[in-house]
Length: 96
Image 1 (cartoon, rainbow, N blue to C red):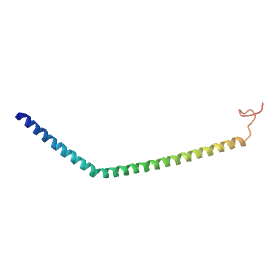
Image 2 (cartoon, rainbow, N blue to C red):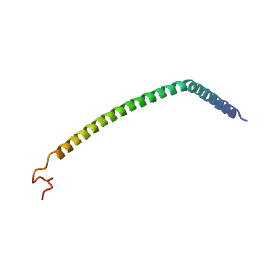
Image 3 (tube, helix red, strand yellow):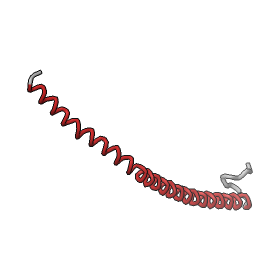
Image 4 (cartoon, rainbow, N blue to C red):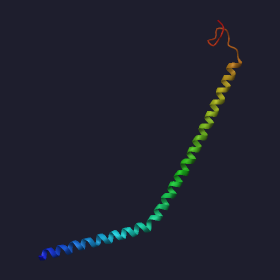
């Protein structure tokens, strides 16, 4: 084995050690922070879902009120139309 080969092996080993230390430190940091991040994400999703539910409920109630109003107006119109007889010569007249 030549001297150059021995130096290269030592250099590769010196590059590997910081990589391994960084990997281990990152793993510990991930384990330490993961529950906090998960908890915060869960809370954000819960808040978002509550907000969406409230918006959907408000939109549904708004639509329900509009439909109810339209149905009432339609019934009133039908009642008025059926209550008054058609004058002669009216398009809706049944006389021939």
